[in-house]
Amino acid sequence: MKRLWFKSYLEVISNSINSNLFRSFFVEEDGVERDIFNDGELSCAYYVSSILLLFGQQEKPHATVSSTIKDIVNHGWKEVDDKSKILSGDVIIWEAIEFDEEPGILHPHIGFYVGDNKAVSINYKLGFPQEHSVMSDNRKIEIVYRGQEQFAKLPQPS
Image 1 (cartoon, helix red, strand yellow):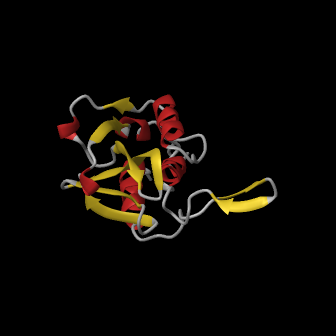
Image 2: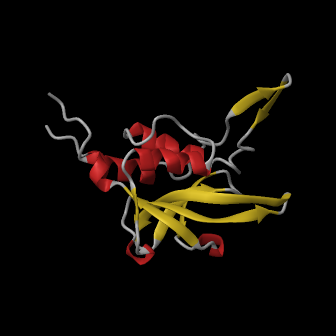
């Protein structure tokens, strides 16, 4: 039996759509508990890094886009030179934007390319993963990372 890691990875991304699994993460600071993901509004890095972790492409789940990127690069993922040649399973980083509730704070966004000019990422307004146009919210794609060959290095059963 041969494990089809990459195909399974793509299916997990597809199956995650509409999931509430990634909405919240709680911390306690000065005796006060709070959800640092604000009910899903800020959970895109946690979503992407958690799925990548399931497939051995992260050391741990992350709360920030920058730490997620650092971890995938450490796992051998490479930046794609030509962003017009995105492939299913690539990780996309979109430009940072300000939210109305937090003027002056820029939030980058991260998600997965799934083919046919579509991506899956956390919809910050709804708080859970959604499939959408790769140019959702008119955000420019800043970086694309590819790591498909890393899945071939994952173990097979003995």
